[in-house]
Image (cartoon, rainbow, N blue to C red):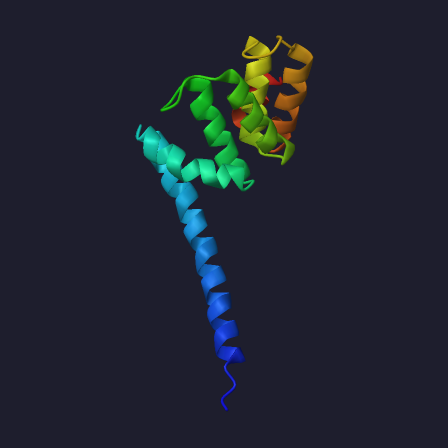
Amino acid sequence: MKRRFPTVFASGVLAFALSGAAMAGTLEDGVAALQRGDYATAMGLLRPLAGQGDAAAQNNVGIMYRYGQGVAQDYGQALGWYRKAAEQGNASAQYNLGLMYTFGQGLPQGYTEAAELYRKAAEQGNASAQVNSA
């Protein structure tokens, strides 16, 4: 009897590696769709990744809800997605959440909270946050 374990194992490793590459492509495809205004495609690609904990996808889904891009504008949803990404250290989400505090979008205006978020994002090199935290 032949031993198939090494072949099956190698196939599984290859499939896992390819799925990671496909997911990365999905994020890139979702961001590209968002940038060209194809909001249905963007949400279809980004929302599942955001639900799986991808911070970049969470930030982009937050953007879509904040500006009503392909979905009804919903500051509560935007805040939720930004917070999830910001807690993971995503500088763009920290900056975006800071903006929502600055303008009181969906929550009471909070300059102290905004400044702290801008500082965190600025420390990671976010140029917009560096300007706002100066």
